[in-house]
Length: 283
Image (cartoon, rainbow, N blue to C red; front, side):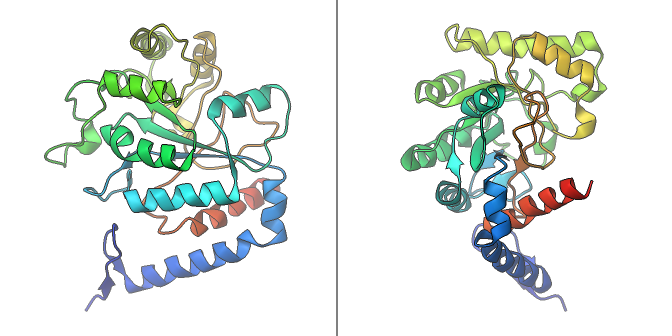
């Protein structure tokens, strides 16, 4: 017999998994008050990544609305939440990023506009939305969403513009959600420059300077790809395989932490952040 419990807004968890999650949350809460976390916030910043904020789906890309609100409240309480533009400026000026946190979103799902943005506005938090320009305003079904019927909707261009008008940053995430680590330089250039041009046109000529590459792994970008991104006028290039940001971080090689269903509580994020610091020191 398999014992399982259900948590609101999440998939069923086996009993041992629930206990493990509870222990990680308890340990993370303890770490928040520890000298180690205080040292962490005095030396490093964090960039977090979301994809969907949606109560109708439950998978590795989706965060429920209640969980998203809980994470945002956690960020606001324990970090200084700033925009990505502000963090890039601090890095370029060799200024401290201690305790700073940036909230980002990838892909361009409509629930970002419908569900996430109102919560961010209510709490007074900035955020950056990286959109796949070829998905916006149409019914393209991404390969990872083929299991859903109907598939999750993308934002319209009008909704993207409203996000920008509300003060949120909008950045590029290629045209087709391409794996830049597998493409030739001309193909990378088309994905990067065409996504920039589409955003610039749709946002009324405003320059677009933020870029996050799809899939976000170390293998999904090349050094030549980073150079193309820089040559295209972007001020940064964000990954999504974990890790923190230091004053010495290269804006074209910025770490991000993906927030997903495996975090049942924000306290668990504290554990992973400090693990990454210990790993860096060990290496």
